Length: 154
Image (cartoon, rainbow, N blue to C red; front, side):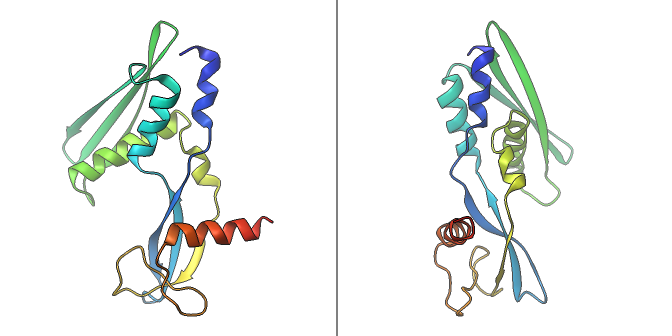
């Protein structure tokens, strides 16, 4: 990869939506856009090529650190970040650290500028479920949230 090609890492990625947190006695929730580790890998493969990047996970007491290197011209440039195993199992913390290291490369950074969506919520459903304004269960949170945003920006 040439230095001039690094900007391609900032291309938008198709996002997914999840319930981040609930409030008001679990009757309301905040939904946020996210990408998963496979999305970061896809961007790195697409832009740097399968041999143009590498990563390494290091686990230590309660922390998981991920280093991502991208070969730019003849030099390997590293960005790193960590995940916390306090609230996550080690595999989840590794994915979290990988995504955070990718964000330091600009991959998915746009997520922090996206609107949050507030919905009604039913705790007894799986974590990703919420309610439409008419009370119907939302079967595909990603499609529903993307549709809401596309209507908002028309």
